[in-house]
Length: 474
Image 1 (cartoon, rainbow, N blue to C red):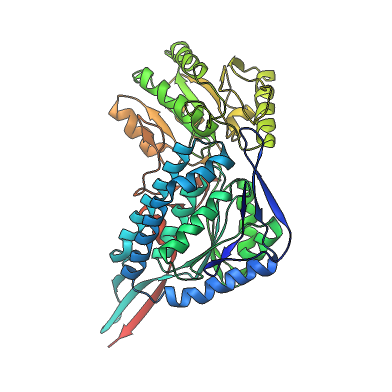
Image 2: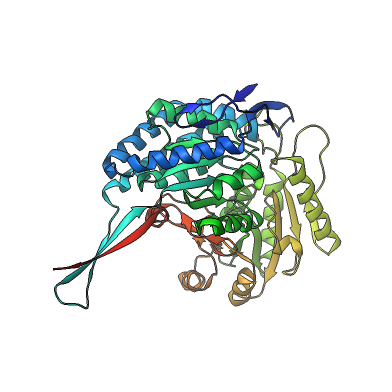
């Protein structure tokens, strides 16, 4: 069983109090470890250390910062199995999948290191003779990073790598469900020789997190989480008019046209819905099927989703793993029950398994309607509701009739249909003939209540900068 201390100002620090956060394995409900809960004074000391370190870190050339990031990526790779083992124990993932997540975190760190020679300003023509306008890109300062439970190693580096290359320092609050892997990452920080105070990782309760996020040195708060968590962060931002960067809820629609490769579409959608028990922000959450193929496609989905078995992935990594906790399972099962009571047809799944672990069976619901809660609210679990439509205009109208707009999916062989949807879908991403995968060089950003700002690529990196206009008369 692990016990972890908080990491700030370049070292693991002896706890200032006896307060602990217990971490449980969701696959068997055993105790995986404890982490020290930071006090408000410790959290403030971490932000202060980050603010001091930023003055030096921000003055390094970007290529010097890139060298540090590459060393960090190497340390992540060399410790991938240790990170993965900790992550598996707290998330229910297999050690193989969790270790690969650490390797993906190293990859995105190397990707952002490549921006070192590409952070560009602008020269803008002036209206005044004998004058130039220079627009500089500068770091913001200290960034507070609030990390989710579902992909905690990858998301941590997805946020801090662009922050660091742009010249910022970071204070990280990992999810209290999955903090053990964050401290294995802290060991990679130390091994890589990252200067003290540049990366700080602390576990804490909500009140202490508020003291971090409202600290006067924090200029940006980045969160991947729920809409309610996003609202709380926006309240934090008011204190210092800090910049928010928020990836919030998702409800990915998948539109299946009559000319689609149905076998390919069904396999991909079921994989999307059952990977990590459906706990992905961009997992397919609602399926719109053309009425002419509805029965055939529903039968394909049923056959494929019924074939997915669940259980402890430490024993068999081919299984679908657990939900994060008992509360999540209770909430999802209640949503399924209400959908069935409201007229949805339970094709498979939809029962609470007996025994230890927060498991929920892959569940398929047919005969759904657009106004149902199961269509309008995020599920974040292995439940797939299906609806039918008459034509692409109706499909688009239903896909867009939603509070969320993070990702979307279209299966068709008609380029005219693809272009029509590409120009009309109300979402930050559209994946044609595949399910979402968030390429590093893209821009993962949501519309509507799915967030503000975004991650990945050039635009994700620029989230962590601010501008300075220099008006030069000569």
